[in-house]
Image (cartoon, rainbow, N blue to C red; front, side, top):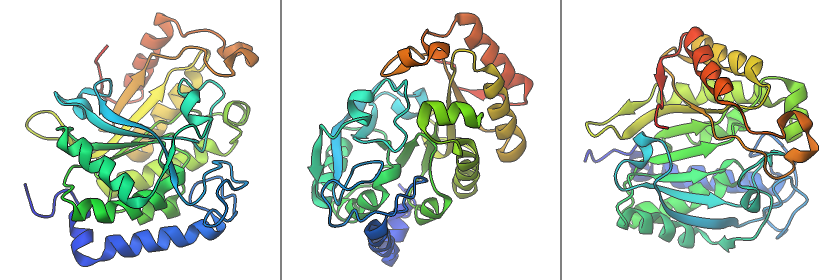
Length: 307
């Protein structure tokens, strides 16, 4: 393996990784890491009045080799997923609400999170995949330093709901090899109703442009495993095809027609979906096929076809 691949190895050698971690941790004192910009003190309050309700330590729910991710991430040995509690979106229909709505996991110090990354590497995972990382960027950067010192050399995946600040993403330039945002909504009314984030699409568009600037289109190695680049997920929602078209048009015209997209059909009513009649049903097969057609009509062609 190239001595400077993955890209964070070079940052660590120069001392820049530790400097980035120190800067990100300082932001926690008046936190603006994610797009909520709560501006509360997360350094000293164990459960601050922030949207994520996460203090100085990240809250780890689980970590394991995941064989249900995209083929290019899971390969034959799984994607080493690390699930964090208290997502910064908490969508009304979240299928992982037992994780994203709660602090039911355990608080981890940097060396403990580093040990988790190294264990996933020892298990043979193709990458380390941070799920809902937007609110714990500082803690991830902080843990990466001892992880690299312990021998970590896997590609890193930033698996996010898309509500990320460009300023924070710039701290990750050269750290993450694969960005995997889910662009959920295009309509501000929908985003406000289902995620209390009317500015969601504007935020997500800026974030995805920055992600693509950093890593470009998705590159696969000789085994078909993601090495570097952008992979966008989009969950097809009931009655949501107009938003699907707007999202796919954005990707084609403002990011790249070569964007790798996973158009996902697995929506089902979960969490608080019953309170929103429009989404209180699974999508139909026709809606899913229509969503795929829309993506192609808008000029995209690289899809995760595994079903």
